[in-house]
Amino acid sequence: MQNKGILIVVSGFSGAGKGTLMKELMKRYEDVYALSVSATTRNPRKGEIDGREYFFKEVVEFEKMIAQNELIEYARYVENYYGTPKAYVNQQLASGKDVILEIEIQGALQVKEDYPDALLLFVTTPTADCLKERLINRGTESAEVIASRMQRAIEEAEVMESYDYLVVNDDLETCVTQMHNIIKSEHFRVFRNQAFLEKTKEDLANRGLA
Ligand code: 5GP
Image 1 (cartoon, rainbow, N blue to C red):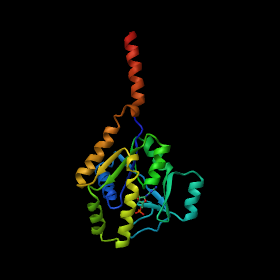
Image 2 (image 1 turned 90 degrees about the horizontal axis):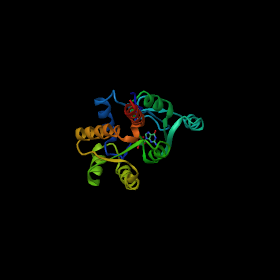
Image 3 (image 1 turned 45 degrees about the horizontal axis):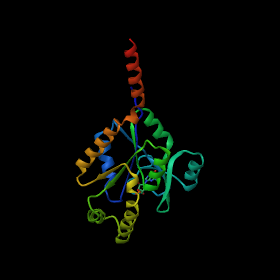
Image 4 (image 1 turned 120 degrees about the horizontal axis):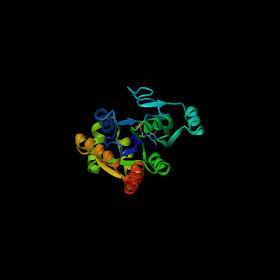
C-alpha cells in the first residue's frame, strides 16, 4: 500500500543549525525525504545556485506566483519575499516521499492552517547562550545583526508552542537521528493510516461472516 508522504515543516532560530541539519538528513536518507526549494526575491549569496538553494525571482515574478495561486505559503522576511511552490511539493507527496519545508514561522503557521496533517518541528539550541555563541562563531554576522537575530528569537519563541515537536540541536549526529525517528513514528499515527484501518475493518467483517 503506497501511503502519501507527510508534509514536514522545520523552523527554528537563526543559528540553531537548521541548514546543516537538513543537509545531513538529506545525505543520510535521500530516498525517504524531498527537500522543497523555495522561491525568493532576495539576491543570491556567494555560492548559491538558482534552482538549488532557491529559485531567485524578481518581485513582479513573485507577485505573479502569488496571484496565480502557485504557492503553498509565502511570507515577507527582512524586506524580501519567500514562498513554497506548490507543484513540486504535491508531486513528491503523491509519490510517497516526506517533503520538508525549511521555512520561517509566519509561513509555518499558514501551512498548519491549510494542511492540518502537516508535522511541525522546531529546532533550537540547548540554551540561549549557546545560540548567541553559534551566531558569533559563524563569523559572518556583525554585532548589530547578531543582536537583531537574538531579538527575533525572542519573538519566535512565542510561537514555539504551535509546533508539534521540539528538536534540541546539541550534537548534530544525535539530532539528525532524533529528527528521523520522530518522522518515522509519525507514520504510525492512526489518523495517517485511514485506508489500512478501513481495510482491516472490512476484512474482519468478511471473516466474521465466513
Ligand atoms: P535566508 O535568506 O537566510 O536563506 O532565509 C531567511 C529565512 O527565510 C529563513 O528563516 C528560512 O527558513 C526562511 N525561508 C526560506 N524559504 C522560505 C519559504 O519558502 N517560505 C517561508 N515562509 N520562509 C522561508
